[in-house]
Length: 150
Image: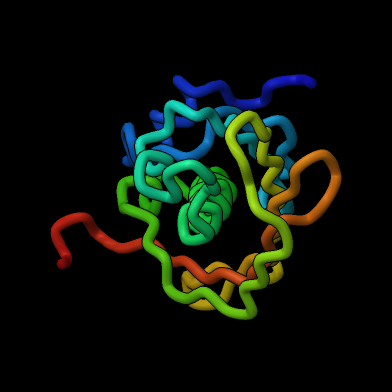
């Protein structure tokens, strides 16, 4: 599988760092339209210590966060230099469905499609899969804001 953006390039785009950087590689990218990222899920993830002892499952909220990070890369890459100076923030999460658990050893394939962008608010359709089976799907919205605006 070809790498479009490796972890070093991802870290130049996203402000997230360990343990909250949840994208390892981007393998497909159609600028402004679609992107595919990978997350290798290992037993070494800090959340597995408490979720759940003896029955490790990746928390659904972190799967949604991984989808948002991949969507953030898509929006960032489609933006001009002025917008790229800002931070991409989640605006909403709708119609989330958790279909299958994600376990240590799984590779999460995250596919995000832009469904629109109006007044700086990006809309995405996202799904996460393991071995071709959907584990999670959601509709996401994100926008960019100045870092010192909060």
